[in-house]
Image 1 (cartoon, helix red, strand yellow):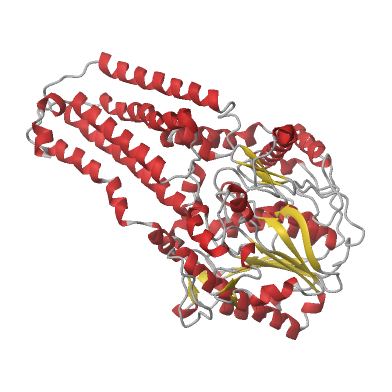
Image 2 (image 1 turned 30 degrees about the vertical axis):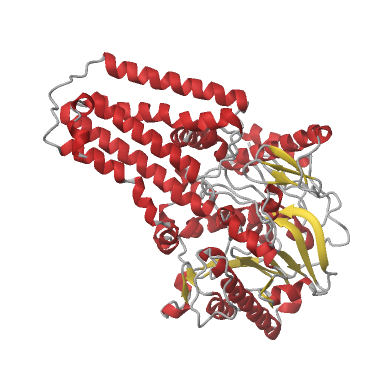
Length: 633
């Protein structure tokens, strides 16, 4: 350290220290982008772009310090450097679980932070301290008496030249990126592309611009926009299947939200023992239909995205959670639609009512009741999970509240025990852990078994109370439980390499629809959470031709089996589109050139659907739409 300070040619004036700061931040950012993020870098050009993309933004942001005088200049440099470091570190930690990058809307979700403490701590590593070592180098230099801050005066020309160089470098970076990935910024559904080509800090600028554009979209929207949406959704609407339409007419509806449950668990055996024996039995139930090609389509909103889709048949947003940022929008959600058919509605959730802004947006959806944490006895620590009441006491305490609701009712039960980091008191565990050496994966099976037992317990109650014979029960997985950051461990679990196609199939989540009197069985139709609302409404005998839905009835013969993901990828029975490449769904091999044109058309259709859904949500366009299909002026 002292040798560095003695080197007066570099560190006895601000320009020298500025150069040192730029080099350190450049190196740290590049190493982080290579080691912490899975960006799918291929070829010399992409490798080169990943190397240079932190440099322009590092120079540009740190150059702001030139605007200050003398010692304040170095203080400003350290503050800016520290903020950029913290942004980099926060994204690295966030990526470890979500395989995604922080956006401005996710930062605004501060009401969730208080409930995340335990989960965040499990993501931290001792090596994370290395993110901050260089900050202490700069602080040491700042307070060293060996530095002459009076020397090396900085005029106007030097800062101007530095900023100009940073802008030129960034423009060259963008031009090279656009050459390799045309329309990079205009088709930015996947944030990993922006980070790969433009770097962490330029991605933050891009995200800020997109967030501003989305927030300003509502002000400029009018009734003509909804007419365009109606024409679009009518173009792919699917007529109900006469065999199933009205099969659950006038029945109660119970949604069971299967937190973090992935489809690979169904019929999976750990050390010769079934992990989810009760759910496995439902696959064979004569009145239960199980969908084995059903995918979650969530993004940064995770659980809230899943709820948003099943209630509205609208996609979650590309940035943040619509529950948070669009909580005051107008919606035509399931509770509101079913109110016209005499249904009362309620949500049961043993967690804080403000988490994901539920206490606000449920009113917008038309729910009559929300039984949150305040409605439950949470005084016994043994009954509490990271995110609220454990599933068994949750269902037990919900029974008396459910019985207060007039029938028919539309209800949703949100479980939390099977949630990352999958901790459970070993006295409650009835199956052993896996032995991959990855704690998240190993613990996953114990909480999945506990959740399975809790669901079996609730089914027993429904049968004893007499509700079972007059209730449609829909159980759905909300999102992945094990992210692709754990693929090495997952290869041990599933016994095969996790290729891009296998990784996409790991995004399948269970969907069970139990209707008394309906013929059950395993349904191989490809679908996603966006398709749940029209499916459920048609089973209840409710027409949807006047509604704006971006999914289609899973039981309809006209159902579209193209399943869009929020980042613009898609899966289908024949073609998978994943991170800019097309794959044969059966072989897992890259698609033959003769079929690429077809895949391109499907991808364009997927992107158009995502675009129009975002237009509805960002523009709050349903305020111009009536339930009968007419347009409000």
